[in-house]
Length: 133
Image 1 (cartoon, rainbow, N blue to C red):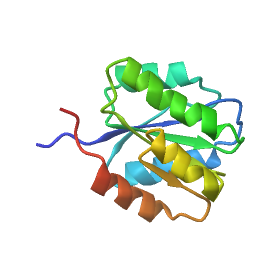
Image 2 (cartoon, rainbow, N blue to C red):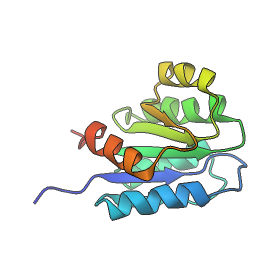
Image 3 (tube, rainbow, N blue to C red):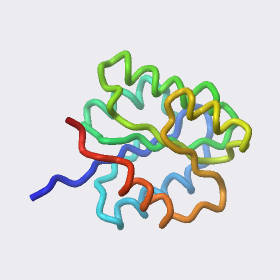
């Protein structure tokens, strides 16, 4: 039997709004993925530690506070520093279109903005996240 993909959903920084993260987490779970949700106010270090401990295939970050240009790449950087750069990172939230190319250059696999359907996110995960070696 094939092991389900494991996705860690996290809310980095001081952003206290987690409805979107919870909606995406539930949609991913309902689509057949194992989902771990870390809760609010996580540091990049806490997110990376949880991702490694939980042996996830990907980390989904949700942010509305505007600190995405620092917090998202920091998670990618810390995963690499911890020999876990094969854990893919994607993000979503209030992200200006002009910031998306920069985030992708810094290692984010995809960015989902308001209005993206949960079906689209689940399909993207299904097509782009593979089991780790």
